[in-house]
Image (cartoon, rainbow, N blue to C red; front, side, top):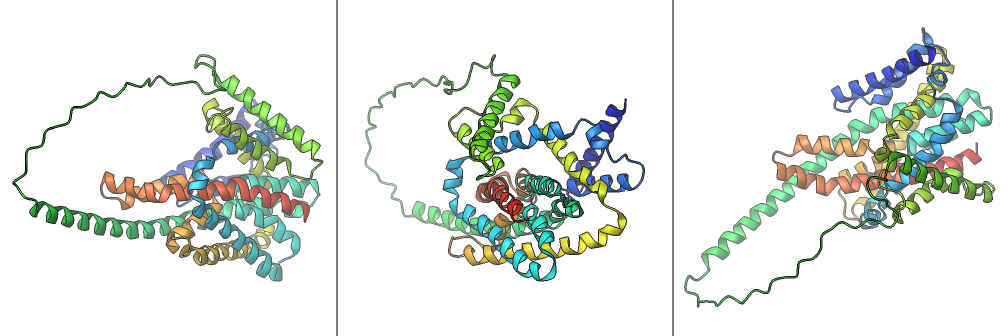
Length: 412
């Protein structure tokens, strides 16, 4: 009974966070509301062990963290990344700007451990926050365990509305360009129509040669079984196999390369070879369960936060967020013109480091729904902005933040 009640409370907190986010059109992040509910709950009547009691304990997390990184590799389309290389460069430059400014100016204001514990979640998100939390616990730096969680929760409060504002400005610019192009094309069409002569020689139509009908029967990918056998269990078996191979490789490397980076790389390779499907854990039907468990495990670290600690946490967190976002803006602005981006689009691509997928997808769709007055305009805006936002999020959250977190764990 205790386990079921614990699960109900944990999922209730997640549910309320999502409802508030939906009602506010994502301007109030779900993670902020959920974290606030956990925090108030721990201060009042919620048991401090409610998350492990709900089945999200150490054994669950040991599986979750590795397989989710393999899954993140299946979200990455290398062809899309190569095609949108300018967006990747700008997004990664934003991460560099964040690290430089926070490690530079921030070091003058706060102690070393505070900076190191807070910066990786600022450049990534959930995975980086988890890695830093686990690293701080392993080194018994319990006083700073709340910093990665607080950074993960707080930076989205600024990231969502700021990104939406940048995308709205970019939408206005794109629609103006489209309006001019349509006007010019219409004028050219009208001019050419008036100068056409009506006297034309009769033209004999050329005989048409029937094209060969090609077979359109879908072919199975090399690694796929027929649909009847391609079950969730088979997908999870493949993910477990790739994860096991990645962790075995990490053991052979003796810690030279972080095991989570290896999991991510193996996920990308398995996806490109066709062994793992796109978004494999979503197709297997377990992605949300794993993500909720990982979120709950991270929020469980708020059970050590007392009211007296908040002032000591909030001041450095808010300061570092401001410095980090300023670093993103400076770096992306410097590269915008040379790479053919507007400053708004460049800054929006860099800001994907604050939340990544699927938030970048959701925010872009919401903006296009508001800014486009017709279906054609909405599709035009999506075609122009969404690929840049997606690859920016993949490059920063899926790759850069994991690498940065693994480096920062070694310099704690």
